[in-house]
Each structure stands twice: as C-alpha cells, then as structure tokens.
Image (cartoon, rainbow, N blue to C red; front, side, top):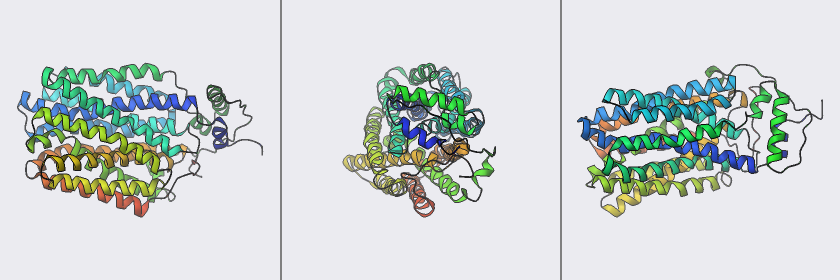
Length: 441
C-alpha cells in the first residue's frame, strides 16, 4: 500500500524520549561492566607477576587470553543475532562475562586464570555488536551519532571505576578481591536487561510487522507520544547475513576501511593501556603512584568522549574520527619521549583524551555503515579485528617493552596514524543519513 510507513518514518514519529534514555543507561551500564572486565587485567598483571613469578611475556598472555575469547564472542554473537534477534544475546553476553569474571577471582593457577579470562572475553566480545545494534535501531536520525558516542562514554566510567577500585584494593587486599568485585555489576545488569523488548527494526526485516508495530506503539506511549501505526513496509530480506556479504560490491571498501581502523586503534590502545601501570613503574613511579596516574588518565577519557559527541554532529563522523586517531598517534609518541612528571602526565592525559574520543566515534560510525540485515554481523566482524589486535598487543608489548619503551610506544603511535589515514581515504560520511534496511538498500 502506498500509505504504508517505512521504519525510519515510524521511528521519527516515536522520537527520542524516556525509552531511549532508559535504554542508553541499560546498555551503558553493561558497557561499563565490560570495560571493568577488560581494563582490570592491567592492574592485576603487576600483582600476578609478583605472586607467581611470571615473566613479562607470560603475563602478557593473560591479557591476550581475554581478547582471544572476545574474538570468538564478537564473531559468534554478531552473526547469530542477525538470525535469531538481538534480545537473547543482549542478555546472555553480560551474564557470561559476569559468571566467568567472578570465577577467575578463584583461579588456583596461571593456566586456570588464562582459561577463565578467555571465557570472560567470550561474553564481553558479544556485547559490542549486540548492544550497538539494538541501541542504534531504536534511534531516530537526528543526533543519532551523538547518542552512540555517549553510549561508548560509559566505557570511560568503567575504566574510572576499575582504576579507583584497583588503587584502593590491590595494595591492601590483593588482586583476587578486585576481580570478584568487578564481576558484580554484570550480574545485576543481566536481570535488568530481561525487560528490554526486541528491536522492532529487526522484527520488521525478519518479516514480523505486527510485533514490530506493537513494540513501536509501546515505545511511543513510554515517550509520551500519541502515535498509532498502520501498515509498515516490510523490506525484502535476502537471508545472507554472512561475512561474504560484507565484501560484496557496495560494502567492500567500507569493510576494508573499518577492519583497518578497528585493528589499528585496538593495537595502539590495548598495547599502551594494558601495560600502563608497568610503563609508569619503569619510568620510576611506585605501584601506588602508577595507579593514581592511570586513574587521572581515565578521568580524561570523559571529556574526550563528550567533545567527540559534539563534533560528530558538527564536523561529521569521518573527519572527527580521522583527526582524533591522528592526534592519538601524536600524543602517544610524545608520551614515549617526554621527560619529567609534568610532560609525561600531560602527554598521557591527552593521549587518553583523543584515543577514547576516537573509540566513541568509531562505535557510532560502524553500525551506520551497514543495513539492518547485516548490521550485527558487520559490527561483530569489525570488532573481531579489534580482538585480533588486542590479542597481539599485550604479548607484543611484553616483548617490546623488554627491549625499548620508546620503540614499543612508537609502534603504537604509528598504528593510530595508519588507522586515521584509512578512515580519511576510504570512509564515507553518514551524518544525517537514514539507516539502510537490507542488502538491496
């Protein structure tokens, strides 16, 4: 029928209101919990090295373990939720990382800790494609990028909480209570997420317009909008939510750009941040002072996100991401060569500011580049590149830092710069553009 609404027209009628604000906090809380599970290992490594007498290379494998799990989780959950829907993965991923995160606090040996952190990563890796797919699909076009960057800013809150807990707990009680406490938020969030409905955009593409319309009307009521929806246009689904579809003619260039950008930002970020406490110790700081420095750097992440959230709606996604990646590389290199506490901390804080701002834009940009039919698959595959780089970064850092701090940080600075160049050369702007529904457009 000619008067049938497209989903974009329907979600514009629903608008942005109480439901989306609540969903932002629910997704964000899970994102903060995941950040704690990932970043917490950087505070655990120095204590584990002392307790078990590990080499730097062995300690690096603990960080690598969680990223191997995250790689499997990103690819598995990203693909499966394009077939079965967002809701199951939305709940189960956060439950998995919480359960195995708690069990890792009781690891009796180095081998057990490696295995349990990898299983924790399987849940954490799935949270990325699922959370961003479901949140993106509930957003109207206006300021969509800003809200997606704000969701990523919850990662900074998790990092700040992890750094603060490590500062308070590890010097007094050791690393095991830190891992146990960091698993608690995820368990709470699991029960909250049970009440979030399935993505109506997914339901429509899956050929279930009545269910999609019912949820849209529910969201409209919660937003205080008087809206009744008639017939919704049902896109024709091709049924090809596979990695091959990401490399079809319309998406090959975008997929190449995203894989390079995600790999490079992850190599630079995790290569630097997983080893930050050790880097500060190597530069003459005590363990306690190192934790304090990392806490200050974590605080700098919040304005980094907020500035990026503003600029993606002013400059657009492409220019903001390219600029923030390039500046991340610059300040990572300056952090490597700086001498004296004021310069070291200034470079470190600015590195943290631009790196996390770049992460925020990348998370907002990626789901906008793929249609609903393969959105979670695209997010999962891109984040898979992150997990590959993240798996390499801790071990690579353990080897390079034993040779030269400047050499290690210069490599990570170059990775940031390469990622920025890929975005500027191959990316396309998505600001104020409607989301695609199927592979056909």
